[in-house]
Length: 505
Image 1 (tube, rainbow, N blue to C red):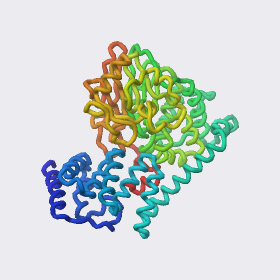
Image 2: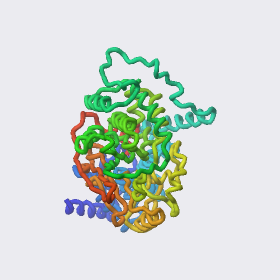
Image 3: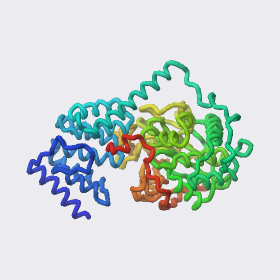
Image 4: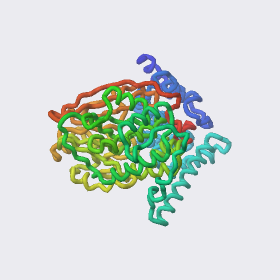
């Protein structure tokens, strides 16, 4: 395999040295159409291994030898898109167009990067360029129209928000008079309360791909909003026995059930902390989030939930949760989910020694635990600052900070971690946010731990999932790995924005 990849790299260079041109009128459906300068990229991406990391590596080496090649920047941009490094993808697409403003694929790549980052106006501008140059390109027209629809929807939402004080969905619901039909045989709350019996019945009901009655779903959402709104932005607990920390679950309900099968159902003697990104991508996100919310209501002092970057409107609009809620229930219910997500705590401190957050540390030194306590979290995340960093940042191996590969927040090195821990008298941090082949990763000399709990992420990454056991006696992490289990034939991203489904990459 390594030999073949090396040959492909040499092939790239040979094509460059021979000055083989690329057809600029080439359709933009992605890697399916191969033509000369793009053929090596296609082989990277169409092979069973889908070796994006090596594609990035070899295109980077090729760019060192020929930094003025727009095609290489465009192709590396696509590789970065496939590995969700949207910030790097945007930078490469922009560089491609600086070199050759007529290379149309560069506009596609840049539009895609901006869409993934929720920068819809910037994306629309590039789609307009493509449509102007290729007026008969149906694919380009569809993407332009879909992006334009999103921009107009956002403008409408802003206009409404500025015209009146936003009322909660809860104010418009009449739960008491919401009838449960006689032919509904599924689980129901007992006197309006979540019980362990209800939770077991609901999980079995979901396992059979059946839908919880909307009254029960609304009851859970109203109660969880009230509960979460009373919590601080930084939850602080004293751990005496054991807690299980799980990372991203991303709508993979059957893998969530497997965690409970392997590790036991949540209880006061078996507490859990789920570290954000409960929804999106996986097509059973509703089942995941209602299960997690149900356990939080049942075990408010033994079951903990933290917000991830996907518990936000922009991500939900693009990556499936909004579409899933609208398909299974209503747009009104999604709005209530949005309200609830804004109340999820942002971080959790265990025994004053371990700090857990979804993303990572901060773009500037000097942030204290007291700063986290003071965050006003009931909002969509800002583009910068501690709240943004807690949801979005990533560790890097080298010291210092660098521009984020995602295009949001930053990447932080081991020296940043060391200073933060010393200032706040902490031992280490636990975060999630990144797929890891083994389900977890220990970096920064053991002071930064990543845990990811969605095995075979999106049915294609082949990674293991993992969860962590922490014991109050020594807080030494114990890692437990697991593999993906079968799920019904509903593909990931089934409810995602149509731009994603059209292969906007």
